[in-house]
Image 1 (cartoon, rainbow, N blue to C red):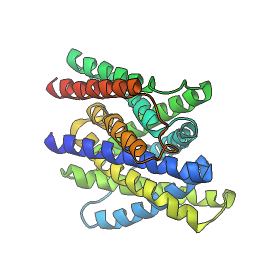
Image 2 (image 1 turned 90 degrees about the vertical axis):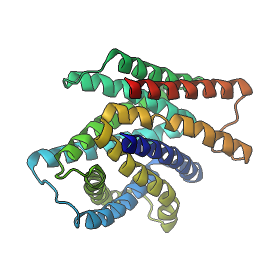
Image 3 (image 1 turned 90 degrees about the horizontal axis):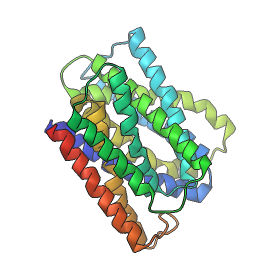
Image 4 (image 1 turned 120 degrees about the vertical axis):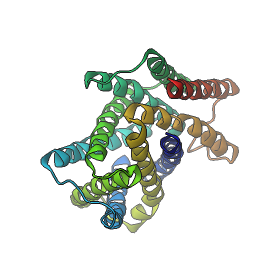
Length: 294
């Protein structure tokens, strides 16, 4: 269990870091589509490298069920990432990172529909985590309907994506959760990279795009290897609650960006807003503890 908790926390930290890099790219080139295409190709290269390494330690169950879940992962991931980048055009990274924490309630409902059972204390943790994620949102300007649409699309597709990759981890042979998770990450992102190559025909091809998309790609890819390890160890709901800790990390990163003058990445808000964010971060920590004890 400790291994899974550590993996979930590392995944949250790396994901929060990746959001800052993504906003930096978009603020520089004004294109979410360019980031989506170039980052997916870069992560495809990383996937093939990891696939080669994993081949020495495990085998892959190339069954129809495994391939179908892989295809579902690719489709929902592309939709989720595109929606996320579209939302990032108008929502600062720290707020968006927190809002994606509402994914926990979607996953909890999906888990119940799939026949799983959550105790009352764990439902309380899910509700507190959701309140925290939404509460962090009310620390900036109003969200437009367009932003809310893209955030909703991102949350839904990230949830389906998480369920798909978790099922793939379960189908991997062996008992080493980390190797199984790395194998799924390798297969999924290698496939995503190949499928993203034709998109280069429809976007400008500049080496600067690869260079500036690399920090986001590396941070996101690393976060996914740890996140899937958390899912494999703890289950998708608990893993997502830990992943929601990215809201806490994002608050810290946001404060650091403002301190060093990067207001184009993290718009300045008043002291009251920061106090509210801190309170919501504490509430999120409480939710994590309650779920763990439950």
